[in-house]
Length: 204
Image (cartoon, rainbow, N blue to C red; front, side, top):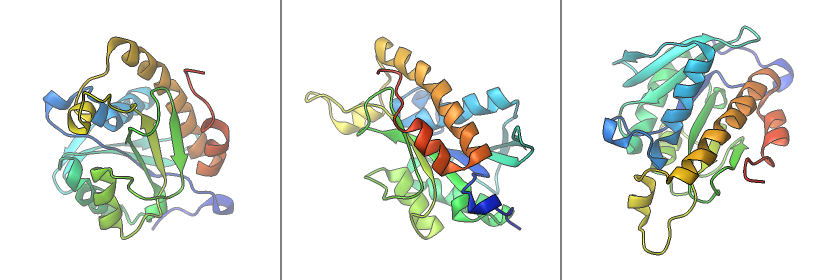
C-alpha cells in the first residue's frame, strides 16, 4: 500500500530520470534526467539493477529520514517511458503523486530548474508517454534547463547534442542545487522545495 503522507505533503517515493539508453546518448541534453538520477544514486549509495518487468534500471534505498525511495531509468527509449513508469507504480502500488520525473526543458535557460506539482507535457515525448500511461498530469516533475537551439540548429539535433564546455560547467554547478531541492522535497514536500528552489539559479 502507498505510504501515508504526513499532513497531506506530496513526498516522492519514485524518482524517474528520462533519457535514451544507448551509450551514444550519454551526456546529451535530452539525457539530463538519466544523468541526474545517476548522481542521486551515487550520492545516496544506491546500486542500479536491470529489471525486465519494469523495462528499466532501478535502484532503491532509504532517504535521510528513513523513507523508502526508488530511482528509475526507463530503457524503453524516450517516447515509451510511460510503459516503464506504469510497470513500477503498479508493482509497488504507488499513486501518480508519488512519482517525481526529472527531464530536460528547452524553455528554461541553462542553470535553471523548476519543480511543479502537475502540468502538460510541453511537447516533451517522454512526458507525453508518462501522462498517457498514468492517466493524467497529476504528478510532480522537475525540469532542468538545457536552453533553446540557435537559428542554425534544429530542435532534434539540439536536444540530442552535447553541451558546449561553458554550458557543461554551468550544468555541473546546477546538479547540487537539484539534489538539495529533491532532498528538501523528501523531507518537507514538493511545495516547500518549489518555494525554496524555483527562484534559484547558478547563473544569477
